[in-house]
Image: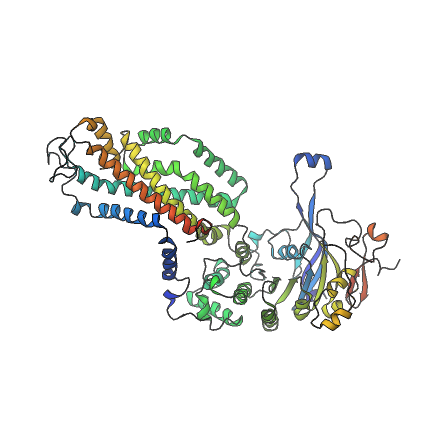
Length: 298
Length: 336
């Protein structure tokens, strides 16, 4: 009964205290910290692109064709004489946008279907889970390719398409979590209090599945980024957006590997690898935070 | 008399089907059920604290759940205030105005509070979903008042805490407050103190007594502990394997138990005086409570009863009047 109640923010369980506790556990995991630093670099690149990038990434003939790296163009230039460093910096915007929005959309669809399926049960559960199975067995890449050809190439369509094939995993996870939550005593208590099913799903189930969902969301971001790059590499990306995948597509098409500037292919590749690693590291660390059983004694 | 009766259960049964393999169901030729509650009838008077006592697995919690609508009876009826309420699905309770009248206090203060809600939100929920408050201020006032009534004082200090920041006793007070916040007429209290230290049990039980004298609330108190039953209860029913074996006024049943099962329970109450305890002759049963799947034929206690006779394994004993308002179901008491 001690504890300073006059300063609610400092109370145990307050948001500040929770963040501190979260950070205390998280900061002990080395890869987690590496991931965060990496991600921070990309975020800075994306947010401050106009100030960091030495050239307009779309401006052609700022140098000659396939110029090798120099002080003027640290990563050289592409077939149209654009500055590759600037393109890579701007590419972070596309990747983060697609990655985060697609993962968010995945999370929304997956959580909604998972909770509805697990909580309502019966025929609803059967129908939703068979639908989930259907999406699970559809071969991802061909499906995406077909859909993005039908819908047309734009960033928003790519986000939609990625979310469409990624949600079943989240839905299954949320459903199993919901199945155990709905038998918890506080859900029965809520029912006796007179709460409707919808009220219970929103106020009791949802807040309790969110931590586990947000941990998997990080991995979904990586997946979305790689998928976007893959689509763009196949020439199905948004041609108006500057994206690492699109860069790779043109680099491949124009034979960059045999050109005087191989960095045209290496730079976006490394950028993709780095952002993928960043999110994988973070998700690895989050897994340990959310699931105390994985924590090693340190 | 009937005007004085608030809750009435008639031949209440709750069977749960047991999942069996296909082959097994063919071989047995019948479905198997867990007979959690098997033909139980009782009446609860207004402003009474009626106790159902029994071991784990005796069906007492299921009986409680039937009365608040969490489970629907397999057969039998429940009447509330003379109106039949069994058969009304729990989702329609609000529409029938039952939700505000019948509430429940849950057993486990660790499990029955959502760990991600403030005490305030936990208590606000019944008021909000039943639309009984019209303004933010009214909501706040009612919650603070209820917290004071359950002796969480000062209420402002407790309202914006999470359950895990409270002690077991404080949590249980929150659970009591949630059960009482709609100002119900009838409350099922399912082992409200079984998770608490003995030293704070009486304090929480006193709350029930207070709500009864202040608001005239009727309670069904479910417990496995005869000591607390005697502390709060007026009348008691001893339950064994889904059936009542003895009913009557609490003091009478505990001081003068008639059924062998009640005798065994009473004799198992710990006595603080070791000298006396050593001299006291204990009445003990054999073994442990069997599963309620296929309960023993005849008297359900007969395989464990030291006084069992031939007839006990063949026929079910009738309820016999053994004193004023005191009934027991045993062949030893029946006139043959």
